[in-house]
Length: 135
Length: 382
Image (cartoon, rainbow over all chains, first blue to last red; front, side, top):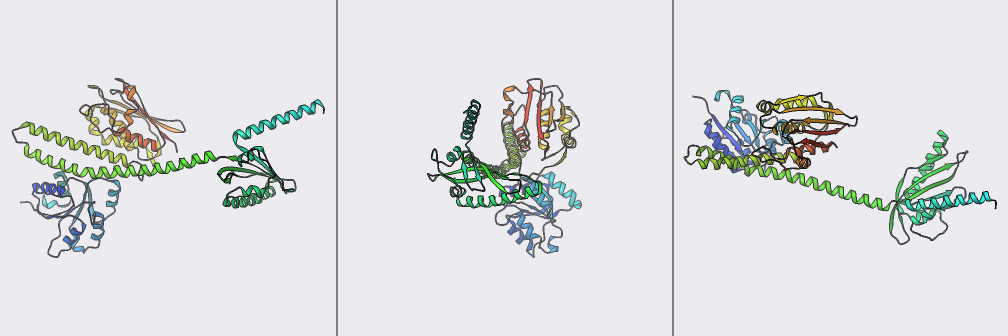
């Protein structure tokens, strides 16, 4: 049997999107559990939690209240290396604003920039590129 | 008095009358200051410009300065000093006897205490020894022009502000509208999957319409977003139009193959411009899309230069456009056909027009129904 990812973290304030993305991911049967943080602050707290193994993939929204995606990435830069080691961050947002895409490219921790919604095709592509053993 | 002298005097009188008329019509007065006697002479129209009508009195440089706003009087004195120095310099270096000064606007106070903006130009005249003998000049009443210009500037600022506001509004609206729409589209997709095996086939049809509607609206909003974004942080760059068009054709491989389109590209220039990808892309896609039934599209893309501007020509053999719609097709959301006949949001050509007009260019179409259309656009050579 193929290996499963342990955890995917969805960082998004939109409950509809979180619900939908959970359904899409679950249908593919590739991960043990999906966790949700509704803004950057919750996501940071989640990642700093010592009892918590870091997720393999973070899907990060940009427009969120309190701490948006950019602010989260700013804080994430200062996180312990071992907490970040295996985490893949994909920005997943509403519009493909060229300014945002350019900005994302300049951030080392960000692997990709995609527009919502998450699709099975996109997830397959990510697995193919970054998690060969899990297919 | 001899007849000849009388004739000459008459002529002088006549030309003086003509000069007065000309000054009155143009609202330009002239003045003259003798630098040895410091006497100043004003023409009739000078008194008019300064609001004195038929009143006449002995004028002086000081009196003229008193009629100016204090800051303008100071400025005029300083200018006079600087111009005189430059005139002396010009005489020394190039033996120039007449030195013209640049026009300068200032505000004068009329006897009724109202204000008027005028424009003054002067000339400094030197003798062969390099001494200033005379300063002459004109003063033109430009109050109406000045007020009109002020008004225009105010309108321009207001217009720019409004444009920015609209741009931001369109951007925010289209961004925020995407979100609820995505929910409709996402969950109707899930629901459709569940209903696939459901015996009521009408249900499937309803789901298809909901999904279709949501996806159309999403395209509309996406295009609107793109339209509102045109001009934002854009920079001109050297563009090889031939290369650009070939890149677009590579993107359109599927569409071209499916339609059987033949596309001929003549040599296109390298120009300095903003991103023209949407322009060529929209025009090429339209040329393919609006094809006649059972006739493969043939599209010809060419360009010429008039020295002042480049003229691009995109000619097709499609369905054509009736003359009465030549202008309407460039208006946002205007469509000539049912979306079931020809898909599209009705934004493409308006976006194209917006980009071309940003360059100071124009776009138009010539067409005959059933005979194909030719789109022309110009990009000024910068």
